Image 1: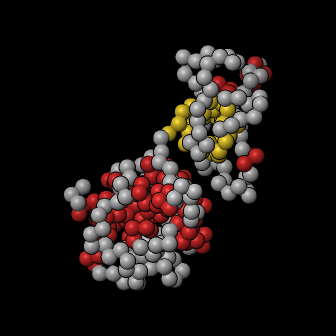
Image 2: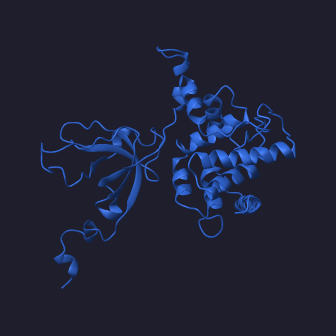
Image 3: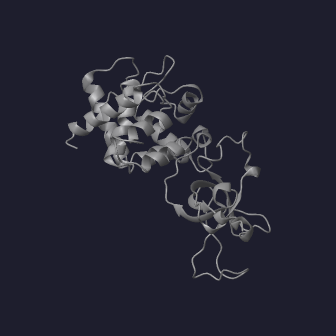
Length: 295
């Protein structure tokens, strides 16, 4: 007898084909009948462009609570997740991926949105401008401005300035919580892209070779967008915003060489550079930096 007739419920519902995900909570105030759920946008599955996938079409995911709660209607606590929380979960229907369940949240640091950074005045005073709040936050992580020629927006910089900018970038990413190899590879990617020149003329602009909407975002990010430290901040800002998928992949790896290494991730997913040989250049530069600091 055919076994499929003995199993009316698809076997993947029993966990044989588990698919996990990381998502951002879009709405933590469910309507009547959806209590205890959160609306999520799943990284790598749901486009972050709302015109392609409107918020109203996103799924309401159930949330797992600890066994210390009642677990029945009206008894125990409800999830306390907030909008923009980063969550981890799995699909209860396996490869069909239509029934998500949230298992927990991932601590992360929130930066102001582009809209917030464009805001010029707050009711409670000038010091509360989002741009100033962001600067106060990143000031905790930025190395001191020593020898980076921060105001130089020319097409050429000296080797001394370039080397100092390289060291400053590595320290900046390490201070933000990235590992040494992750920090070095991010810096190597920027180095191969621009030689750490902040010039905003030409097709590819700034240390990240920003083009199109990414350059518009950089300009909106700060009036001082041509400065080296502001462009570094913008890289961190992108990694926690529109480039969150790249950030997740970077955080999941800590190898410079080999398959699916950091150089490949940074080049393909953050720099968006698919030109032949660029990944190898980034990898080579990362190894050079690592060896230079005795790694």
